[in-house]
Image 1 (cartoon, protein in one colour):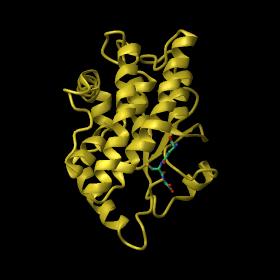
Image 2 (cartoon, helix red, strand yellow):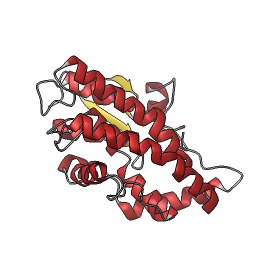
Image 3 (cartoon, rainbow, N blue to C red):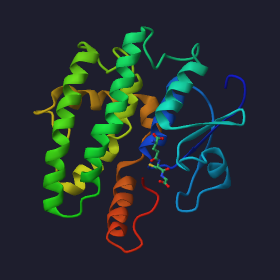
Image 4 (tube, protein in one colour):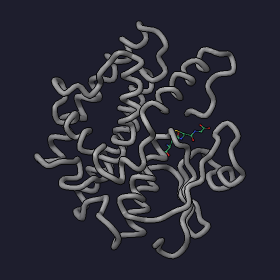
Length: 236
Ligand SMILES: N[C@@H](CCC(=O)N[C@@H](CS)C(=O)NCC(=O)O)C(=O)O
């Protein structure tokens, strides 16, 4: 199945970045060996494969590592161009647009949402929520423009920007549950709310996503550790 060598994915079950790699591999229908990393005690393979960042995901293809989730998604699309659906558009300008929004999701949306994720008091949560809403407003508008009335940022099928944002969806639900918020509120963000439902109903996505209750417990444990002097560990 793998083009030119066997495939291994180093990930952590709760990592939204590893989820991106899993979704891309799943959409392409590629089989691979999944290696779960304990990020508090990283394997020699991870340290050797990603010596710069020492983070998951790493896709090892024929013994050679590919690091950084968005790079992995694009690598999978290029290396298996003839297999499964394309994850990037054929048109260069549309590809540039997809890459732009994927970068926005990591640079702007995630940085703002991370403050909500790391909030431990009602006051912090209210402030962080207020700061992430404008980023979601921008994404709602981007979705309307990119999808052109179709199901996904990528049009009829899931593409790079869908994977970039969609990988956070169960995390968003879990943080909403603890914070008493509803970030992708259908009344406020109808496009993104409907998109999220569609994204989560795709088989390759369902297979890649962590289970809500398990993630919720993990997050509660993270918040408890955040308050401890040792800190949470394993999160960037
Ligand atoms: N920009 C990276 C971020 C990856 C990342 O932050 N991974 C986290 C898990 S969610 C990690 O491996 N953390 C280990 C550490 O920070 O030591 C990507 O897109 O792949």
